Amino acid sequence: MAQFQTLIVEAPESAPGVTLIRLNRPEALNALNTALLGELAQALAAAQADDSVGCIVLTGSAKAFAAGADIKEMSDKTYAQMFKADFFTAGARAIEQCRKPIIAAVAGYALGGGCELAMMCDFILAADTAKFGQPEINLGVAPGIGGTQRLTRFVGKSKAMDMILTGRMMGAEEAERSGLVSRIFPADSLVDETLAIAAKIAGQSPLAVAMNKELVEAAYETTLTTGVALERRLFHSLFAFEDQKEGMTAFVEKRKPLFKGA
Ligand code: CO8
Image 1 (cartoon, rainbow, N blue to C red):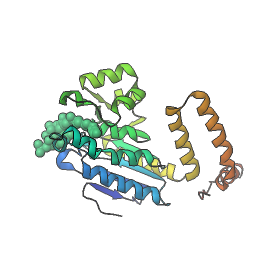
Image 2: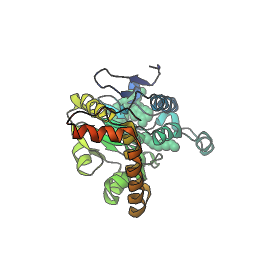
Image 3: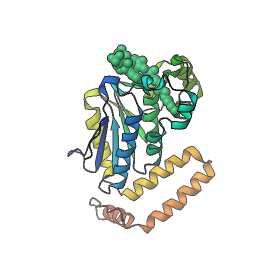
Image 4: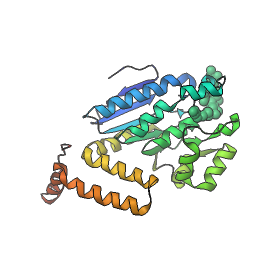
């Protein structure tokens, strides 16, 4: 595994086929800076290129998934510098372009860019200690890597306005109730539970996983008629893969399927 300054990347033995990426800037509650987002892009590209990886887990520490973009790095920037550097987009693009599922395992603070990073993942599992928020209003700015758009799609306009205009935090239970988070686990078992879920996904046909991911993503971008038509076409196309024959034959023969990604 490659060595990074701001991340710890592992292939846990307990979770075959899973890459675990831990944000690791404890001195700044995992605040997202240029170095971290560049390394995240590299780690995701490596996981994408590795056929033995079927699912990626992105997590932070017990205290913070990430407490936002790095305010100290940003505070003195000019408009021209922000525009020219296309600040922070490397990591965001790497997540958007990754065809393998990425699960965010969030404990502690997921604020500002941290909340936005979690929302860019395919789904969010939370510790009971998780706290989500878009507090940029308190800094005289606005979310800048998708918060106003994605939070509104997750939780609806009223709650998104409330969160973004007041900058308040939302606990794990409210986040689950609002559809931001899919499940909550006790903080000390969050990573293990997430790895078990990721390993289950990694054990499926990687072709079917990628197509399912693409289809759910399409639900955000298209009309219902177009999305359903796309689903039907991709469903048909799955019958071109050996994995479809294996999956259905294994069911009929009452055994576990062995998917080959072919
Ligand atoms: N950036 C830089 N450093 C941070 C950040 C941050 N976002 N958050 C925490 N830190 C640092 C603190 O400065 C402190 O460092 P030091 O010990 O050197 O003073 C260390 O982490 C520990 O933090 P605290 O002492 O503040 O810890 P507390 O437990 O008292 O408080 C909080 C925890 C409530 C999370 C608090 O740290 C906090 O409010 N942090 C800032 C949260 C925030 O405002 N986040 C939004 C940032 S803006 C953003 O994310 C915009 C994204 C869009 C960018 C798009 C660009 C195109």
